Amino acid sequence: MHARDVADRPGSGAEAASDADKRLYLEALLLIERLHRRLLDVLKAELDNVGRNDINNVQALILHNIGDEEVTVGELTNRGYYLGSNVSYNVKKLVENGYLLQERSPHDRRSVRVRLSEKGLQLHSQVNALFERHVAALGRQEDLDLRELSGTNTALRGLENFWSAQVRFGG
Image 1 (cartoon, rainbow, N blue to C red):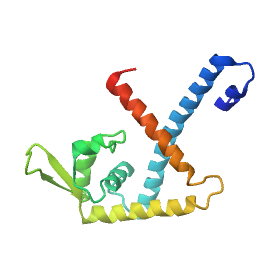
Image 2 (cartoon, helix red, strand yellow):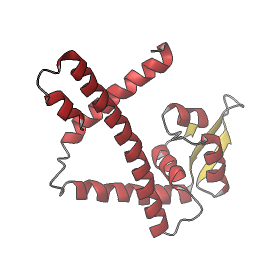
Image 3 (cartoon, rainbow, N blue to C red):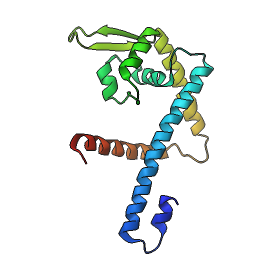
């Protein structure tokens, strides 16, 4: 039974509304997890298509998120580019495979800054082109209006803020 089925039941009262809310919340959690995995699948397929076997999908997403910036490993983690795997390991592999350049910060010798190498910029461009193709294709989808993504993004940011508060202040 779907959450909206529970919400539509007559005479279910506050308890059913709570059940419906819980089902909506759990469905959102499942979709977020599934969408993340599916995005990684899409990136893996693109890496295979362009013959990149020295980088994995998580690393490609990290590269895309770095873009033309210069960041520390700590900033990558704080910005949410961690993606469920060890960011230090991924940075090390990206440096070893020539996608990232790293250098010690002149201001804080303990801090290492990373930026994309020419090879990394090239892959960033390929991933960016993939995302541009997706946007164009989504614009032709009948079952999804791109303008709806704005509301989705607002809801997801609200959920992110809620979870951040749970981590900081407890439930």
